Image (tube, rainbow, N blue to C red; front, side):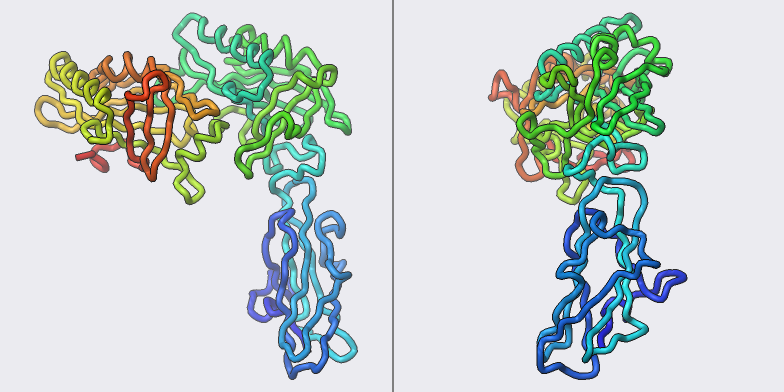
Length: 476
């Protein structure tokens, strides 16, 4: 007699006479499940069959799964085990799960255990889209990805499109009422043929240690079977209405002007540097050389989720090796690992603050990357002592931009709290971080920032996850 091994010890699914394993990710390939032979050995190989139980199965054969070897397997002679197989196929991503239920059939010499003859396998339908199928059918709020992220620093965006984005950013920065700086843009694919163009920026009324203003423009985009359609403007949020003129070069004079195909990116245009990244884009149907592209992402229509910078270097340098990222970089200016040039700057900054800020004494530094903003900005934190010996930290927030070569653009000021202002020494901040382009490199858990113009100037820090609370973390 034969039995499915997992059915003998896995708990039965609610309302079923068999367990359901999974869910398994779509496209995962062949899965094997042990079958036990009980009651004695067979002197010859035994070919055993199994079948799909149609009334219990919601998955579709040939789309979601297939049965290798026509639904049979072998229990070798003088063996007590064999293995049935199920191949979980790749298919266009959608929401939910499907189940396939397998049942042992046996053969003329081997009976089947009625109690342990069935096994359910749950297949997760939501997963990375299949590049064998049209992209536009696999983007949406219930899909694995719902957005295409356009990083202004992506070198694979054509020059003329980059110029449109840069002109929009220049227009934004020139607006009265405080400096505004564009950080990122993406297109979100929603329900009912609605797509939203989202621009995330800094400045204006959004100046604080945490805020980030967002402009959105929503369109109807009815796509045909090939993924071709036009963006027809429907509405904008308040910032979208006030910023529409600034963003006209990329909106009105490009996205709204032409017909596009939502499609995968040809490897000849751009190949992801990381295997888990997939690329999509909008390609003009009248000019294949004109397009806007970027990584597929899971964001939202309101812009409150910030995409991780697309520069592959960011992922390599800040990964914690466990699927996450470090959030802080602790910098000890007195360490012998710092360049003499940086140590000189730090001493000058220290002397400056002592003499101009009521006896405050700079102590250490920290770069804090707010997880909510996904490395889209950085806070420079100064730990310092008051004249009476109190332990305080001051914070300054800056725009953080890293290109595909791992170069950090000069820090662009956003906001500072009162303590940040009191400890803002120009020798370190205004005349160094805000004027220098750095190349980043990592050794172990340390990252070094080296001046692109003068490699003898560098500083480094230790990757960490420190909270911004002097009662919890104070560097000695």
